[in-house]
Structure formats: C-alpha cells, structure tokens
Image 1: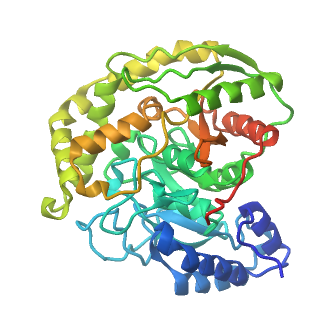
Image 2: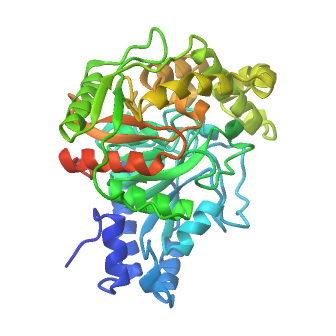
Length: 447
C-alpha cells in the first residue's frame, strides 16, 4: 500500500487528479500522523479532524477535480488567519472562541484550488516573537525537539517538517516565515507587497507583513505561491546567469554570525558559482540606525494589534512590547526610515541581482516557556539568532530561506536569498538550482 505521508504536495495533487487515491485517504493518513506525533511536537492549536474529512469528500466530488492544482492536499494554516467556522486565537488568551464567518482570502484560494485545511497551527502571542510558545502550546523543531521550531509561523513549519502536512501557510513581518523555515529545514518565501493578499492583523505591521508558503521542496513552494498569488510562477526557461552578492556580515553591530551559518552561505555561493553565476563578496549598506528602526516597527506593530485586547489577558512580555511600541508609534507613522532604507539599498541591487546571506546567525533557542520570561530576555534571544531577516520587511522586498547543509547537531542549516521588487520567481529559480545541486533531506528523522 502506498503511503502519502512524506510525499510532496505536487505528487499528492497529481495522484488525486488521476484518481489513484482519494482526498479522504490522503487526509486520513495525515490526520493519523498528527495524532501520532503532535503530542511531542506541538504544531497544532486545533486539528479539524471531522471537518477536514468532510472537506476531503467534497473535494473528491468536485466536477473540476482533474483541474485542481492542490487537489486533496492537506494544508496547515497559521492561527492568525481566519478559517471559516473556526476561532482565530492568535496565540493568546485575550481572544475568544468566536468562529470566523469567512475565510481569509489566502485560505479561500487554497480551498478553491482543492486543498484541505486540517488545522490551525501554534504561534507566539500576537505573532510577536521568533520562538513559538504560549498558552496554547509550544512548537518544537522536529529535527531537534529540545529547540524551538522558530516563530512566529513555528507551528506551520513544525507541521510540515514532521510530515504532518506537505505544505503550510504562514506570514512574515520580521522573519516569521524565514526563521522557522531555516530552523526546520524548509523553503520559506516572503513575497513582496501586492503579490499575495495580506490583511494580517490591524494593518499588516505597517505593510511589512506578507503571507507566504512553507514547503519541503522548491517545487511545492512555487506551487503554493502560485495559488496564493493567483499567478503562473512556472520555472524560467534555461539557467540565466545572475550577479550574486554574498555577505556574511550581520546587519546589527555586536551580533555576529556563527561559523556554521557563515560557512553555509560561502559554500552555497561556491555551488552557484560552479553553476555559472557571477559571485562577488559584497556587504549591503546597512545603516547605523537599522537596529532602532527595526525595534520601533516591531514594537509599534504589536501596539496596534493589542489596542483592542484586554491587557490583563496578555502575557507580561507582550504588554511591555506593546507599551514600548506605543511610544514609538508616532515616529513610525510619521517617519521615513523605510523609504531611506530602500534608497540606500537600490544602488546595491542595481549592481547585483540577488543577495545571498546566512538565514540565521545561530541555531534557534531552546524550546522553553519564553512567554513566562522577561521582555528584554526575549528581545535579546530573538535578536542574537535572527538579525538578518528584518531589513527585508522594512524594504518590503522578496526574501526566502533555503535549506543548505547541516549544523553540528545534525539539524538543518540554511541560507537566505534576497531580491529587488518582483524577483520572487527568480529567487525560486535560484533556490531550485541549489536544491538540484545539493539536495536536502525533506522530513525530520525524529518524526
């Protein structure tokens, strides 16, 4: 008997379209996998076992089944996006169990494409931090359950890496797709503005937050992004040589990149050089004020998201984060630091097509009750391991995390690819080359 757990979304959809397997059988296998593993991994806040099987039957009966790009594919949805009939808890006790009346546009597009939502995944409170834990559970890295899956799309990443679903939907306001993707050995892509419907929280963190895919392969990431964007993102024809800048410099002074991540970026550059691309060592012109600007936008976004919630039901770290953000809000709304950063970066990306960096500065922190710890301790832990993601939310340009190599622990390492506006397809093409030349293991062995 063929098992569909561990198969890619593309493989599953093709089999369902060809009627070699039913959507119900695929979904049932993945629900069994969730029941087997999630007590240890903590990926899901809520599993839609009965509803998912009913939806699978509906997909199987659709007259357009043979045309659906995600026919019968189980998908996990981050618990800050509305799913019709389910509560959206956003990782906090300050929200309630009122069911959403409608799907978020991205969820609606997934369902229209034949995907089946099997559950909503754990996030840190209000999706603020780069580790995923809180009142609804702790998401662990399936490659090393003593470590965090990352955040804030940590539950979705853990679900995909453990083979509970082949693809996951998340979003990224300061690295929230790329951080857990890097921890969990996945492909995670933050698209540029207006590529995928946003509508995340109260204002998308000033337009910095974008919805995007988490997948085990570039093919699946491309497939999921195509559905989310409502666009054809098929691979480019031929291998177009690119001018690629490689930088292992941290954007933040005093926050170094550790040896495994720096080595992964250099080795990925060597692989791409061997594939015919022009590689040059060059550091982006990160400004001295990048750290304060990142902190101001990070905290102010939380202040806006928390303004209608009862602070008594928020954890202390979130209350402090929002309080700091309220002091920064005027400067964020009236300032032009983001536009200044774009102007600084534009000449760099006129000289180079793509920037290649480490995805993280060090491995993810321990899977621990960070929500019970102080605000400053959380901020320092997040900043020390993920200084390389926020600049590209501030510019709004596409960026993605790609698995590459392993850490001394045996967990995945990763690199980041960044491009100018409209470069999503080019980044996927480069990631596809890395995958072809240095294949990575798709599913965590501990799972």
